[in-house]
Image (cartoon, rainbow, N blue to C red; front, top):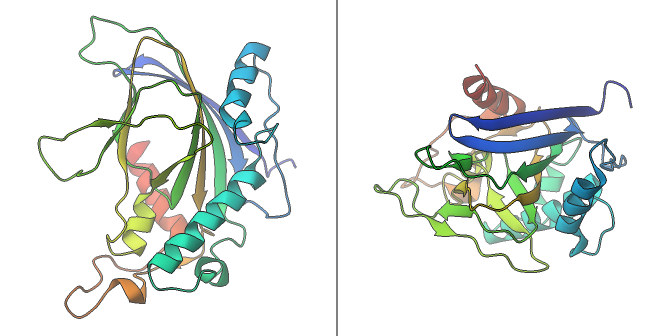
Length: 242
């Protein structure tokens, strides 16, 4: 597995208003025959809390294969909604060695009253295709349905036992010519520890993403030029982490 598995611990403690710790597990290209379990050196109490995020989904361990299967099913439903075959994304090679990784997130409960707002994650949309999120039920996640509207109106995302939260990413918005809009979201500090597990599913990096035929017309031409998935994500990440 050497050279294939990428593990990164990312810590942000009240940096520019952000309060968050994250642990990343994944591969740049995930083989559908390879299963990665999150077994890492963190304290047992934290591991139990991360496991609690996914226990309600009837899986004892956090597995990329479980999330990949769910993600593929959701994307098949999205394809059907766009008047495409249910296996459209599968057939064009989106899931042939897709880019996918897990991010284990811990938001400490401390709130610094001297700061102008405390955010575990400031307002953003995910860059890729879709994100699946399992949470421990602690509030704090908010979405803005009309992201181009000012002032922005933020709504709390209420926890539902047994349900995953699904975020549309910027790449899918581009692919569908803005029929599916990416989800602008943030996490606000609520004075209580919060744990969540996010699975980011993106297509094969070499797959060319161009406006789907069912999403454009003479009256509504493609808004974005074709681009390889990997190039698009690298471009977005380079701007973020420059």
